[in-house]
Image 1 (tube, helix red, strand yellow):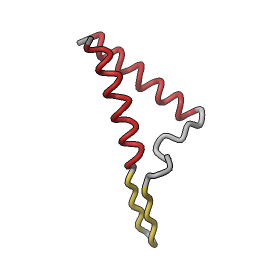
Image 2 (cartoon, helix red, strand yellow):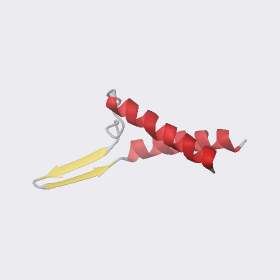
Image 3 (cartoon, helix red, strand yellow):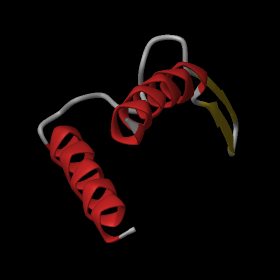
Length: 64
């Protein structure tokens, strides 16, 4: 369990570094944004799909 937590922490730190360097995580083409007056609704559909695929691949590598 400890090894898994360290790996998860490193992955989160790597994502944070990429966002800090300017990678547009959360603003990918295909994400839906509605703005009307004072209301903003954001649906990160493509971002969710990309993160799901990456996490699936990452976890499948660690299970072996």
